[in-house]
Length: 115
Image 1 (cartoon, helix red, strand yellow):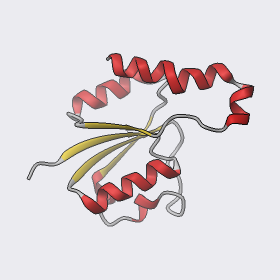
Image 2 (cartoon, rainbow, N blue to C red):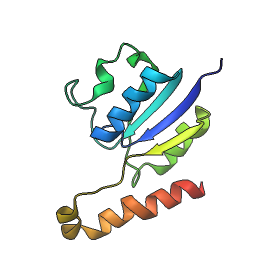
Image 3 (cartoon, rainbow, N blue to C red):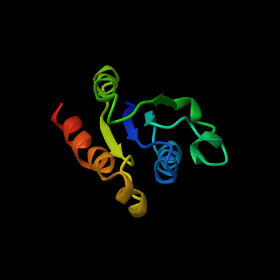
Image 4 (cartoon, helix red, strand yellow):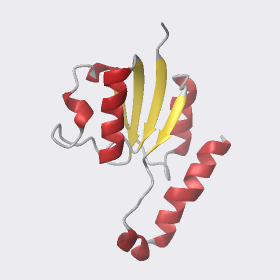
């Protein structure tokens, strides 16, 4: 049985971390975890307590600033699936920095898809 490789953008979010844990528990998978923040504590990321954690490779990369590095990870690891949890969603904060939010949620994602 072959192992699929997933790239999870926004892996340090609650949703991203929970999805990684779900994958580890349900399929034979390799995971490339990508987030612009440092990896959180075990208490905040469900997959860090998983016995299959050795299948997760974390990279601290920002979709807005490290697009080519993310593209290189996709090609170098022959990624089968890309799942995006990197979108910013706090509405009040989006009012303070709307350009940053637009870049993350729209422009950088479209740039990635065009690569």
